[in-house]
Length: 299
Image (cartoon, rainbow, N blue to C red; front, side, top):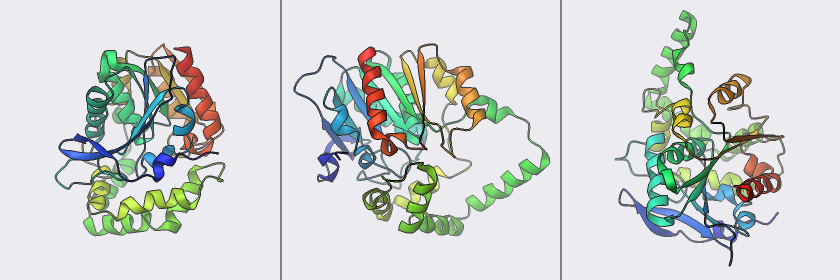
């Protein structure tokens, strides 16, 4: 499948967030039937490169933007920032208001899915819709479930270990090893044909940047800020919602999680289950692209 030439381009810093230059890419057709824009938000450890197979097709019909969240990809990784879902939500909201300035359909995968939903809940008239691809996040019910003594003890010990900077460094170094990156990707991609050297390098290279370790520490800090639960965000969302599930995702798509989604998603929601893993947009891009275009066309 055609890969976007935009992802091989030089760094494009034409917009700032919190006074930091943010890498963005965009593409649009000569004509479009709707005055709306599609904004793509990547997941943890990924970047605009993860939309390599989506931008060329989506931009044949609509104006498409993608950006590297602060702390990831080609965007800076400052050490004086508290990384959280709220931070990235603010980045998405600011970009739509300051750069796009049109009704926008926000699309997000994994961590980017949480940022997309949180941003969509705040954008009001600038939110034309939200598309979630195996979004990260938690529900209020998951925090209030009573745990037994063993579960509490395990989580307490795990929390202590995860706060140990030496252990954090060991985990970080292990995670950014190319062989381990590929191993992890193979675990979450059902069809592994797109788990290639380009994808591995697109994850590994930004992890070498100064400040990348601090981003990792912030995201995996068990006592760090978590933002609003998904049920609260769904309640605030006043726009159409499309759930594109990679149905074989070993991380996010547990039966219990799906049941909570069904309980709290707004009425104006369409749900499609795909034969894919955690990153369906990159694993089966042809099908995902078609579902996105069909849904946007129907709005």
